[in-house]
Length: 88
Image (cartoon, rainbow, N blue to C red; front, side, top):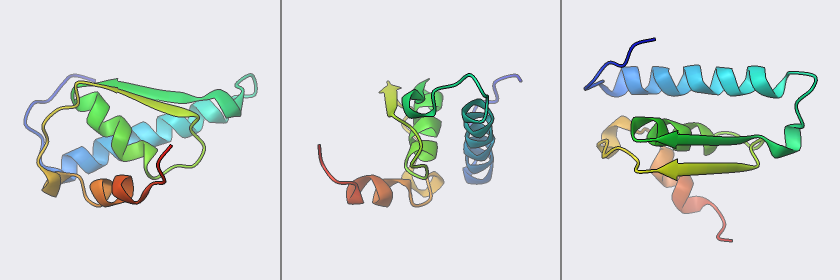
């Protein structure tokens, strides 16, 4: 779908939910090695990838490049979840 600039908190959350559904569909494919699924994103996609990754336990990795400077009020509990993750 086409890019929409300047989304609000509700729309950002909806995009993260949509991305998580896509990840679930990919993981459910029979020829996918579920232990090697990674998520990557750039700019707003990187922020969305982080929002999805902190809520899932089935991703092997997440790669973020140049995450968009989205205000923390748009991210829900994402930052708290990142801070509570074990290091290393």
